[in-house]
Length: 101
Image (tube, rainbow, N blue to C red; front, side):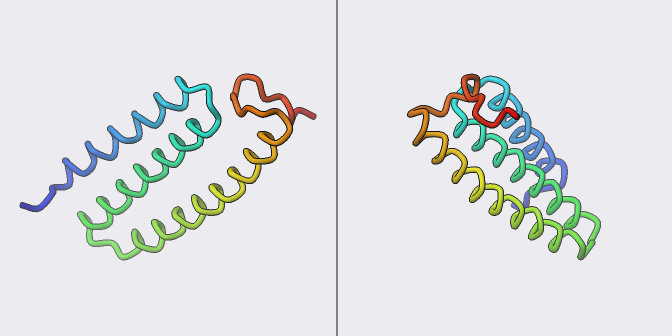
């Protein structure tokens, strides 16, 4: 049985909703970061679903571009979290004011 377009979009919307709820609800910066990654993956799933449904070849490179940006974001984000943890010994998002100018 092959997943249909609607089921794929519903799954994508569900994953995106879980990501938004997680970003609003969590206090730990790494948990927030993981939920943002979940939202990016949900958007990728929607891109693939639309590309497959309408036979567009542009969906593949767009997904690869979003995955590249997500990988770069993961590297930079984790480096920032490690630097903050070394100075503060915690990474609770509501208590981090280190980057204020």
